[in-house]
Image 1 (tube, rainbow, N blue to C red):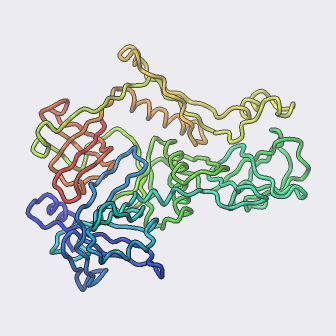
Image 2 (cartoon, one colour; image 1 turned 90 degrees about the vertical axis):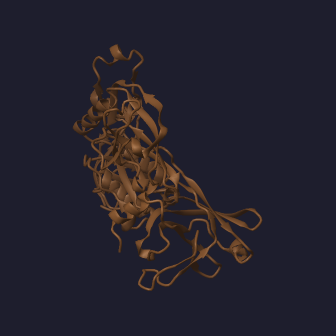
Image 3 (cartoon, one colour; image 1 turned 90 degrees about the horizontal axis):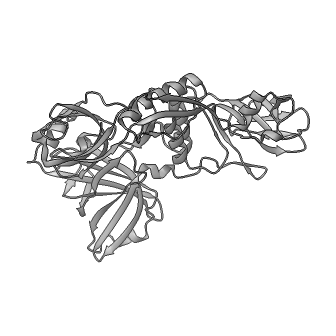
Length: 462
């Protein structure tokens, strides 16, 4: 088995036979099967995990590798020659099945190859005679399904994670005053009728029963153990059908959050909502594993890039980000905004404000920014899931620091293979142009390049 270091050395060399292997699943009408394809003749070794497997030498073109911090869906095409032997494929079901693409030397064992992308097949088509096109998407396509799938009394059963304030449950049995606020076990810490706490019985399964008929709107507070970014994402990813080996939900921010889903939302939208809270994003890496990342000030990177590795005139500034004068975050989200006039007369003004507002707000300012940058904006209030003021303030401070000076995004064309970096990696760059005459740290926010080529274009943020 070759080491990662040996693989990177191989990538840096130009005198090797680069083989691309494709393992694509489909349903042939009887059962799920895997087809094995390559851009050159190849047979796996007897001792490989997939032993003695011929890979059909039919691939004529493989897609460029591409990933970005802000692109939701990447579709790529593999072009395949068809001399007629592959015509039965038109009757196979391809959409939604997994596909893996690997790269290595034609002389290596299959187990020494490295995965360069893992995705979901979109379709098999034929745009020209004697040619097939196998299109596939990023694995996020698995998360385009709805979170809520269960019904009670013809209503979607909500899903609550963490500490949820003032959620509106569904009434599942009017005769018994039986309500439901979660599709799994939780603790209901308070139930209110028009803002006033009332007596109830918590069944500990996401349902409760009122002790008396309600006067107005019933809301409740919920406590559920999946209360951090990491725990929420892990719970939802498993619920969506990913396996534990496909999830790396480790994340540095462990502040308590609260999330209530009571409408038809996709997993992708909910994950975006969670990561927006902490100024982060989620992505699948080359091996198809879900990772959580955060936009942060770049530090010294594991890879240094210099002028010898950059194409002539290969650096361009593509855009700038003007500083902001302040950053505001909403916290302690009110999941049921109520009309002040409908709330009980016994409530205080403070309680009325709490139940009729969307959230409480913290703000961090950047003093003096408007002197340097007269057009510096006041950032829109960020609708976060933070429960506590101290955590919301820590995040608003962090983001204000990020936006306290002008940021720049560069495109850098290199003589490096795209497999050596991932979006979210930190690099150190030095060159004769722009601000890089002295080495600068930068965050990789985009990568593109030919899978079999020795060149890569980076998008970096600093």
